[in-house]
Image 1: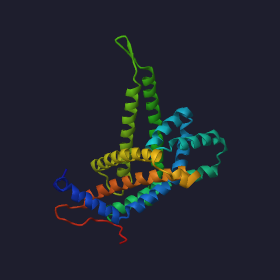
Image 2: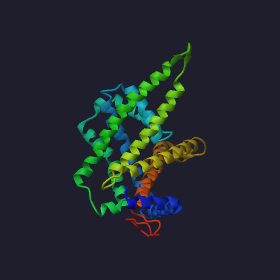
Image 3: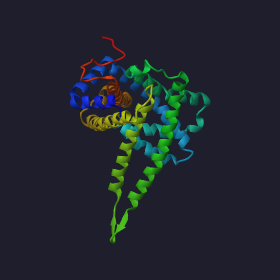
Image 4: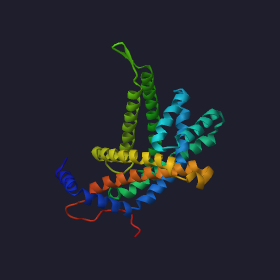
Length: 300
C-alpha cells in the first residue's frame, strides 16, 4: 500500500460521512438509478436464455433434477419469491429441448449476453476516470460476456456437486456415543454460508472484470462484501414485503412474475452499481481537500 493510498484510507476513516455523501452525489450525477434500471431490464431479457443454455449443457453431465434443485436454491438469492416460477419454466423447456433449432440457439446466445454488455457500459460511466486513460478493445468487450457465462456454468456445476454432498451428509447424520445426531441443521447453515461466499465471489469478480483498467483486488473485495451484505438485507425485506403488504398481483395480474423479478433485479443492480461508485470514489476522491466528487455523466 503506497503513501497516497494510505493517506486516502485514513482520510475516509476520519470522515466516513463525507465520503458516503460524496459517493451518493456522484451516483446521482452519474444517473445511477437510470443505469440500474437499464441493467435490470436487460438482465430480465437475459436471465431465461442464460439459464436455458447453462441447464441444457450441464444436463449432459448432471442429473437434470439435481441441477434444477440447485438452481432453485441459487435463484432464491437472485429473485426472492419467484425462483419456483423460473425453475418451472426451465423444466418445461428442458423437457422439450429436442425441438430447439439453430436459429433459436443463436438467438438465446445473443440475448443471454445483453445484460453483461449493458453492465459493462454502466461500469464505464461510473469508472469514467479509468476510461479516459485506457479503453477496452471491442473484441474483448464482445467476448467478455460469453467468458462470464462459461464461468457461471462451471460455478453452477461445482455448486451442484457440493450441495448434493452436503445434503447427503445432513440426511444420514452421524453416530456419537451411541446416539444418532442429525446434521441437517449444520448442513443448511453450511449451505447458506457457502451461498453467501459464492455471492461475494461473483460480485467481487464483477468489480474486477467489468470495469476498464487495472483491477485492485482489495477494492473489489470490499465492494463485493458490502454489496452482498446489503443485498442479503434487501432480499429478506423484499420477501416479507411481497408476502404480506404487496398488492402487485391485484394490479398486474398475469404479469406479476415479470414485474416482481424486474423489481428485484433493479434493487440488486442499484446496490451493485452503488458499490462500484464507492470504489470509484475511493480511487479519485480527496476528502481532506474537500474536492467535489468526480463523475462522468451529468444531466443537470
